[in-house]
Length: 437
Image (cartoon, rainbow, N blue to C red; front, top):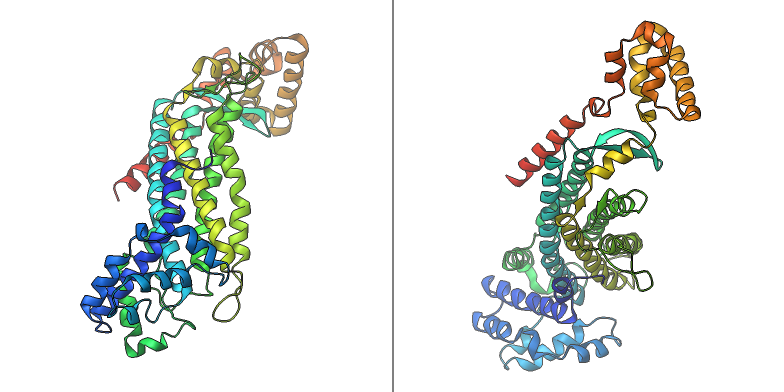
């Protein structure tokens, strides 16, 4: 429920294991290119760096005694390679180099899924914004009816937030996922003068960024990743919450393409997709906080804070992947009930047009008198069960200032949308520009 099959596979024990082995193979290849080890040795090491050759459960059990899975992994890899290669396995690296780089590889694989789903969800928001640019509905503030807007404008807001979250994640993926290679104390002393060259070659082998210096206890990369994932989850959670609210029986403006049922109530059409997105998004901030709280790490290598990152990071990736995939599906099948939007817009019998009605009166009556007059007419409409338009048309003081046509215009919701159409155009243009980059 809180992952996707693809995200689960890419964050599984086997995936982490293969990512660690990919580091070892790439390290050997980089060292061979730098002339540190023979090329045939690097080839032998790479040939053995396949997860199916290892027992992940055994490595996990042995990891407890050293607080890292890498010691057991390196021992098993060394046992697999031939005699000439044994001295060169894991040469110059430390356990954290392996796990941190593996984390970057796992993150990159999952971000490919997340970003693809976010982009697809944004495309559907763009479609909905264009399709419903003229679908007038009520905007709500503090859960109360406020002013007219359009559903297209609402979707433009979703679209912009999705595009911004996707851009932030793309920057992390493209610029901030870096190799880790510092050796036991961050100096690469055992590689002598070739340390920086090996780091450069290792980054190229894995397609990751080359850091300025090893980042063993500089966790800004992890923090930026956590923040970007947390922001994306918040954006997805907001969309899901809006859908849940619009899908309430008393509102009825939206429904999911495939609604969920109830174990007890046969009549219910629960917004199950939105509920799962909300549940995933609600779990994310705690995981982000855990990763941020692990940032202060002592000296050159941490005792506990670094190790505390692994499982929260894995869970965070799965939850955001699930929320992104769920939102993509939700928006693709979303049903928009325009008739109900129109009916809800008319629930107050025009009271939501009070600001619009007061506007043209202000030039003659002044701001305070105009607002007081319209407020009195709103109360009268409620008491008499009439409409604001009818009260305005019947009031002598109003008619001294406004004609019948002007009153009608001032109480027409579709004519009081302000910059909503322009905002839709701006959101769509920004989205198109982002797609063309």
